[in-house]
Image 1 (tube, rainbow, N blue to C red):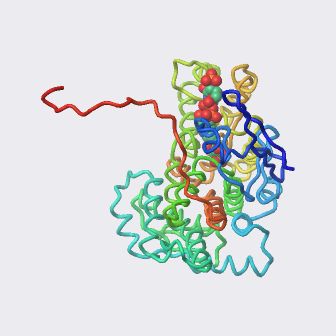
Image 2: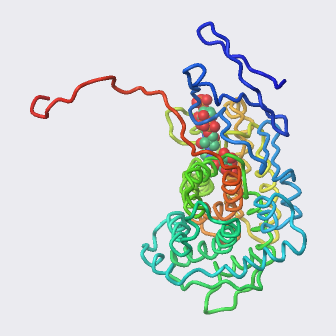
Amino acid sequence: MSKQAEIIIEGKSYQFPVIEGTENEKAIDISKLRDLTGHITYDIGYKNTGVTKSAITYLDGEEGILKYRGYPIEQLAEKSSFLEVAYLLIYGKLPTAEQFKNFDTSIDRHSMIHEDVKKILDGFPSYAHPMGVLSSLVCSLTAFYPESLDPNQTEEQVDNSIIRLIAKMPTMVAWAYKKSKGRPVNYPINDLDYCSNFLHMMFANPTEKYIVDPVVSAALNTLLILHADHEQNCSTSTVRIVGSSQASLFGSVSAGINALWGPLHGGANQEVIEMLDAIKADGGDVQKWVAKAKDKNDPFRLMGFGHRVYKNFDPRARIIKKACDDILGKLGVSDPVLDIAKELEHAALTDQYFVERKLYPNVDFYSGIIYRALGIPVNMFTVMFALGRLPGWIAQWKELRENKEPIGRPRQIYTGETDRDYVEMNKR
Ligand code: SDX
């Protein structure tokens, strides 16, 4: 007999099954609640609501644990490659050498984008935010590959869309960057690995030979792995709910890019660097800014701090913080805001306001310092988050489709006007 939860409403007892995941997470299955009791649950921001069962990523916010398909993020960040992690997230297991070679080769072969995409790119002013450009370019793939729109497409056709999206995303990101600089785009080079190819497309110029720095490529590989998935965060939930209407992979991911753009989500990495630069420009008085973050009358928040799930250190932040010193040292780069970030972290973590609310540095707090050291401009930071998160969005969309999950349609509690009759305008 499965465990049951009892809810008593107006003196009447109702039993609901308790379900348990493989990591002992527990949930009350309330799928019959409204039919049985006429009540719905209310959980603004879905802070306590499970919307699916997923086998992709497990995280424990209290213990600071993050695992992709059971593999600890620390091991993957140290030993794996971003493409191998993408394969793991999407297909559920680490690839054999032959499977990886086929995956890598397919991606190489699809890294070009239709020349007509340049016409879309040219329609944007150079000052367009690259996240808006990227979400448009990703959605434009529905036009070039209309078979991706068919909800009854074959598994092979789904796989083709997956390969195309992973292959073309770096090209689109790099082209959006070149467009913003008014410089000519670079085409992918198949004999470069995924991260090196991206760096080449981003930074090569016709006037000089561009040599990819292996330190930069390795650092990017680690950052992309750390961003690859994070279970049901805001942008992934967006991809899933859009996909639940049987919208295409390209359309669902385009929506996810827009959700990630928000400053409370993926947009935070750009906000963190702008905040650190502002603190530096203001004289570096971190206590003043910590006080502002605590002041309810001040809209300022310590960007890169706090998390809906992690009430302990974000394990990704711990890895990135260590990588900061390592990579900046190897590149011979010194960024004064790194010291400010460390001072800010120390000041916050010893302040009751942050301790009581369990606010720790999250993935965005240190990542921008590395991106900047790699030569990536601040307004491209959130696009880099999207490039990293792509395999997770794909894996979650694919899982929803394979599980034939129903269209997402939450309920509400109505608080508006009750019954009233229409009055002609001349009588109001
Ligand atoms: C990402 O979900 C994911 O997994 C996301 C992500 C992923 O990989 O997909 O991990 C990526 O989005 C990381 C988060 C990046 N965002 C930021 O760094 C923005 C700054 N952080 C916050 O705005 C906030 O912490 C959130 C949005 C991340 C979480 O917000 P919650 O869970 O809704 O918490 P809350 O806003 O209700 O805050 C609880 C309390 C409040 O104080 P009280 O009302 O209790 O007095 O903590 C305070 C908040 O005011 N608080 C902060 C704060 N974050 C929360 N106070 C100052 N500075 C902050 N950063």
